[in-house]
Length: 139
Length: 139
DNA sequence: AGATACTGTAACCAAAACAGTTGCAGAAAG
DNA sequence: CTTTCTGCAACTGTTTTGGTTACAGTATCT
Ligand code: FES
Ligand code: FES
Image (cartoon, rainbow over all chains, first blue to last red; front, side, top):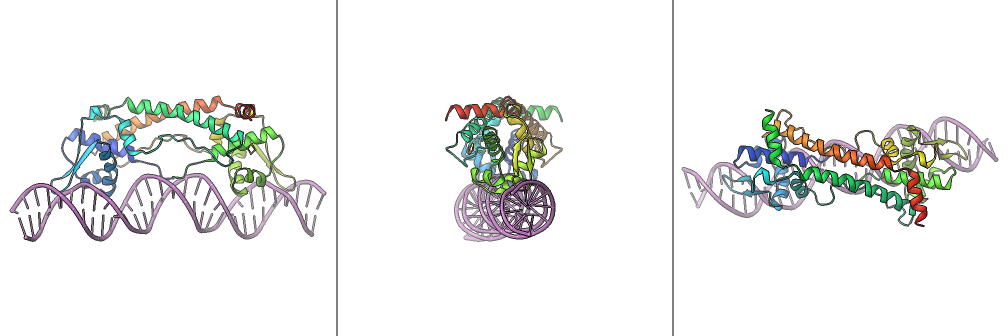
């Protein structure tokens, strides 16, 4: 499967917008992401639905943040992009009545829940401002 | 993406073989997994390369375990099936020289490493015998 | 009003990964 | 020498993300 690069791209874009302040058009963001304006609208559109960015049409329009970088965590962005679980356990449903399959699935589900909790904790603890400061300090 | 059900299926098959003891043919395993014998050979073949099972061709052939369920962990099976990382961080490489992209990627990579460590710990702590006992106790 | 510069969205194709299927070669036992 | 197995190559199907084209709607400027 082709891996999902949306979270990394959105972090990049949002921090960029936070640092440079102003409004950005899909066209400019697309160039910075080596991709197409439509892909940018598609992905930023998901963030808009969750109130992280807002857009304006027409001449002079574009995208901008609705709150400061310090008020956005990586988890906020991830949740806006993802519908279901972050780390779904890869279960089987070949033989639903078999106790062995159920026990195997239970083990996998438990392990994935632990890992997902760890991931969520790390995502929640990191604000975009933290990323911005790290980036600026390493220029 | 279509999710990867190989680990769950292999746990099921291996515990089944451990409990019922004997040799099993790809055909019988395929029926139990609601799939095709070729898929079974393909997947069990990966386990054979890692010494978890062995196969014999010809009449009366089939698959059997090389060690007891207590000597196989979920992690062993996972490592046999997967080449790379269990939980690869979904990084971006659109603008490799941009410090913001690098900082974003670093955050994601760190978070995923934590989650992967948690997952690996849980997988390593669980033997197939543990799954077998849970299943038997719940019949 | 009309040109210009934006977003919003639908409809497609490409790429990647797992699953499923067919077909056939080879090996071991009867 | 037939039967019953594995091993493997070569397809197709399916799902998900990414990329592209095309067009409708909207706000600003002259
Ligand atoms: S291109 Fe703007 S921050 Fe990386
Ligand atoms: S079918 Fe044999 S253990 Fe589930």
